[in-house]
Picture 1 (cartoon, rainbow, N blue to C red):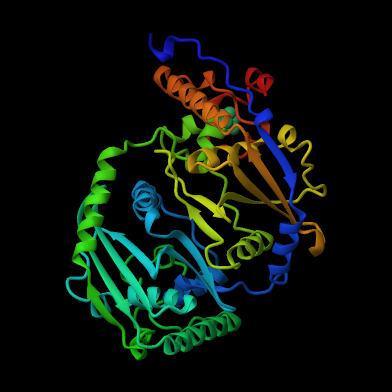
Picture 2 (cartoon, rainbow, N blue to C red):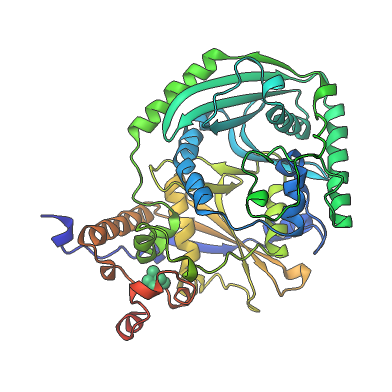
Length: 456
Ligand code: SF4
């Protein structure tokens, strides 16, 4: 019998499989790392690579992503997840590093930082130092933040999901001091430009003729005649060594993974939380006029993320996933999935009632535990209206038996698949009532109708 015609068994009750406890010690530790409210955040390595886009991002904000850019990001997610699976045995994924002024996120941190570049362009033929100086600058900054004189650049040339070629280069730097000095100078020139409200003194944008999002959105007044940035690494005497044997291993591993995995039916954890919304998300982009503009992150949120990211190296990473889907990364803190949320509520979450009142937090974390093979996760809450000493609350959730959430996951996927087969989203539970007003599918879903509202 097809699933579409079968009565599906009830979803397992998961609430008994979750234990919630507050972790005030960790909350205090994170509060001790919070930079003062409203103070400038650390500059990211990517900002230091292209100062003009960083200036516009800080002063005007990022322009909304174009449909083409969204599609490009979407198509790269599967490859990104597969690269994570390939590299997980070699080190930590997306390891955060920082000093007092700068922070960065290293693709893979083994005995040296590894930066992986996937693109439709052929990799450097002989030497990234002369052919891709901006990539060398980037990985040199990671080396400097770590205090390690070595790095690796990995190139994967792709067309869609087909791997055309790979190249790997090891890099050595004679000294990190010149790089550290140049990084400080770039931070100062960006700070000065932001303070003066003018990018006039900043160097030419490396993305000027290569699809700069700010130029595309007519935000910037760059002409392309600005002086190019001075090399960050020239005085560090970088030396590169090709590693063709590593490139071949990478090509084979990625091709094997691509052949073994199938396009996911779950694209985001959100599809599992709100399957009816997931149903519509998979049917194509919503009517643009119904899409609620993306709200930029608040100061509280960015301070919280920075507090999590600026502990010892290896504390904040991306966790490798075991499951074949979704194509969404799982942020980790001390080896466990972590979610950061902010709230304007005047009352803090009560660990004894949070499962009933805000079940979405446990579901989000429970599904991330299933995906990563873990059974402990953390919710880090930031309260916008609280005093600084009450700003952060940490709830630790333990999922035991962890198999319960695997069963919930499978049950929701079966329901979603059956609804897709029937072409009938109304067989899926409506989302929570608070989602209706901001939902771009509200004109066609029917959950806000009298009948739909009665279900909610
Ligand atoms: S209209 Fe309501 S039930 Fe339908 S997808 Fe949107 S929020 Fe979910």
